[in-house]
Length: 342
Image (tube, rainbow, N blue to C red; front, side):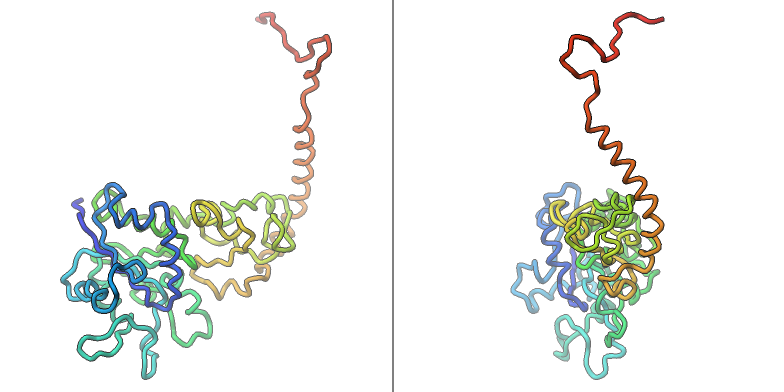
């Protein structure tokens, strides 16, 4: 496959968003975003990043210039990164929900949806960063007036970019920084012609990052197995009874940590509220209550866990004793026998 030597990244964070994903990515180290932009990662195309937080421009039309060029078809190839949920502009009344720059002809604000319509079909790849952009997130919860949705809901789950790729969803509220940069790097290697397309699950998440549950990588998982549960947030034990959804949530944060391998919700005493899941937040509220299946699973594991915990305690006690032949008496009792045996 023939690859590209240069790639633009057009990053719009004017969806319904707090810009937390952009801020989070500035903490990435595997690789760092500055290493990608400065060409320090071998084998990647030269990257031109257009993001308002990390832009060297003073803003305004200077910042918007590459976006307008891409919309006209004068800038290619590029990766379109969407941050923030997509509102339904068909129900906006007389106004608009969120905008990005002004229309150069009318001077009126341009809804983000207009930019998506112009950029997504021309993009070599489309990446949704954070749970808001992937599945709608907080803004799309029950009772919201904006009709918010994820990018795949807006463009269609069968959408394919100009490079033939489906939307790449990297959820998280905010996104785990290295999860996003690792995924973006894979897409860039694919653009360079040196890697296959990134493998995605049915919800368009990278399989190697979201193929396991929080529980499977959690430092507290052994406490669950032993039926030993926290009753408050000061305990180091399993937090299922105080609201953790880790056993059913696809996320690698406990395994990976947050910054430099340190942190991650359950690792530091926080429950998993399922922020990487398409059903977030509605299906996981109220956050501090035990999940519906938690009472049954903890009840079933309790007798088994109590028995296993007792047996391990006995073995631990035995393993903490030295063998009886380690002594200073005048007889060798280790069982050593130097004679050859047929």
